[in-house]
Image (cartoon, rainbow, N blue to C red; front, side, top):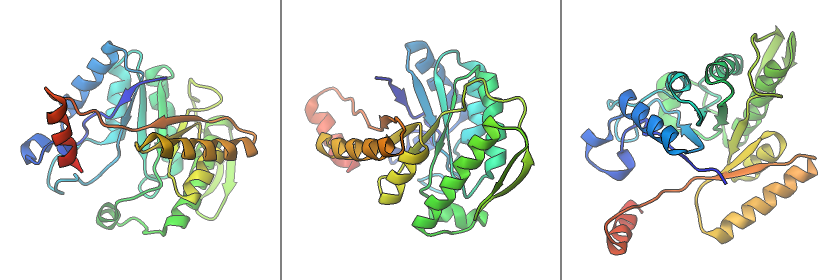
Length: 253
């Protein structure tokens, strides 16, 4: 088992209603990442957002520029950056990912997020697609990235992307390619993860529900002659007493 954490790209927003404490900063993210690296955490996941959950005028930290900085500063921890296909072209993402993998000496991974937050897409003028179409685009997005990571003069003709004789050099340190994390518990999400993910991510929930998801997606991967790893997000509530912890849990609900 490996243990990771979410760096506070938007500050402590989920733990407080105070706007001042919910402001993200690079220094805060850097300090927590360096501490996690020293303490032996295995991985970190930088969420990609362009609007702060507590308000569009509040500061938050960009996932990919921050991942580049942390790749140079940390020594052992894996660095995962989330990407939303509607907001970054796959060829650009593939090139940035190989550069960060080189800087980190083989410690980088990509978390592809098919979900969205509509205000971000409207603000940035990105195409607004339906649920199933987003997952179809994600499948092509991953195919393009993996093609560019593993081939020279790569071409691809799909519904969403048209790549012509493209090459990325240098290639990543990791072989055969940079790991891809995928989440999504709908029918389309499970099918996509089984086909293309290296690690399938699950939102935290009761153990019986986790078992169903793992069993289902694992079988789908086996049907595709693939072996998957699984990851789960969770929140730790630490207080002076169990009663205080349960009170905070109820507040967060």
